[in-house]
Image (cartoon, rainbow, N blue to C red):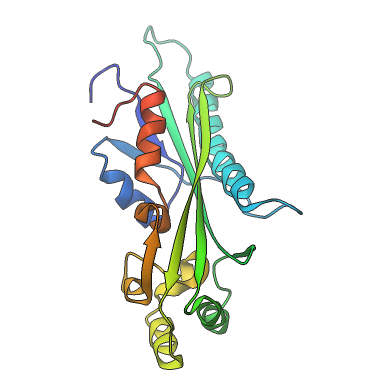
Length: 211
């Protein structure tokens, strides 16, 4: 990394987002954001994921601001940082499906998704430090996903694998869940949790080219 390059900070502890960000080939570090993931009344899916992505990025960016303020000067310019936040939801018939509460909830979600098409929304926020006051971009990506018809036995087997339990909509397209998806219209990486082409364009607009 050149001296003028910003340090990328992923405001997420999701192992899937961490693995996706590695694909861009840029050095980064991971920090856990402190944000409450709760939908506001009447909030549309796109508005929700953009707000939550921004709140996650803001939580980490403000932490860096406090650290920089506590250690002034030293005769060196503070390194520029780009903080990345993201949030993903699954939407079926306008209803947001979050992470399942338990095994039965996961089975119910999969029954509803079986043989049908739903949308996956991911909001992405990139904030430049020092923050607040630095440039920022907040956008979202939408991908349509169609499930193959699922039998009760398939649902039981998939839920027993444990994969659905920490994922919005109770499935992970990058794992065993790949066999229950028949068609994806849009960005595959968006369904995993981080739309890499959109993120790359956002980074480029903030002065950090990927290619």
